[in-house]
Image (cartoon, rainbow, N blue to C red; front, side, top):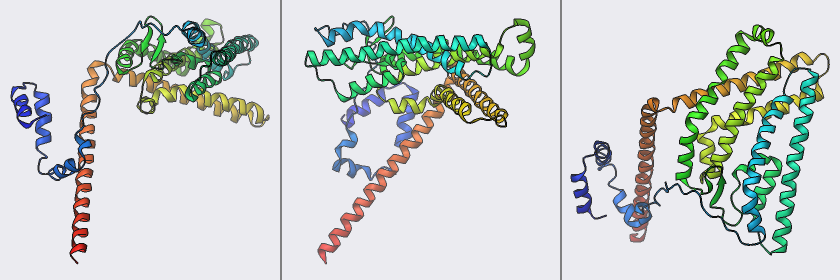
Length: 367
């Protein structure tokens, strides 16, 4: 953009926020003078980055060629809901297997849930076998990433929720939206849709903590039921919601590592029950009569840690409400500005080193 055009745009701008940003930058004019030469040597510094794609494109028509492509298009919605059912079973199973009670009815329920999970898992084994046969029959060469995704589903079937189309990985099937284009716009749209429901679900941890820490015995006597079982199931439901949201969001996000880092609390909520579950299995194998007490204390610590993380997740959701967002976003903006200034200072230092190197080479040539 030419200097005159830029000046005209600034003069016609009446947005105080944008004018503030321009002023902040101009205040560092003298500090950034060395960048003039650096830009002339490395024009990439002023190349415009691709614009953010905030379009929300849903209800697309997926490819329907014969063979493998048609199978994947037709099977995607069915396998999506089976994957969702598997997530419900996984939530129940993880909590049941870490349940401290010795209730025979709980043990029977555990075996039934495990049996249903195994049956569901066999469906995904069959799906992988069908994909393999159709790819051979119709000479469709799947990429390494396709096979990795399919085998990952075998390890944890609920991941099928976030699996893209085989032929067109840029689209993904989502309930009520159909085949949708995976971009930042869809991610932002789903975040807004999940915002309030997830806060309400995270809010459930508060009555759970109050009952467990203060009113456990009275509530158990009143209900005349295994209260620990029902509290575990309630926490399993919260885990289910967080896991479903995380799988769906990270599958759509194009910056998956960044998304995982930014949502580390959600990731911790999802992974902690697996740690508790593995620890429980290990305790079953290694505990003796003298170690049972210590084992249950350790398992109890895992459960308390999980509850603490769930409560932290609730607070995190609350703090993202609109009334709290302005201060939070301003802090992020200031942090981003600081990081930008640091990077600009590094560029200036780099240019200064280049000038010193050139000066040394010129002096050596003169000698």
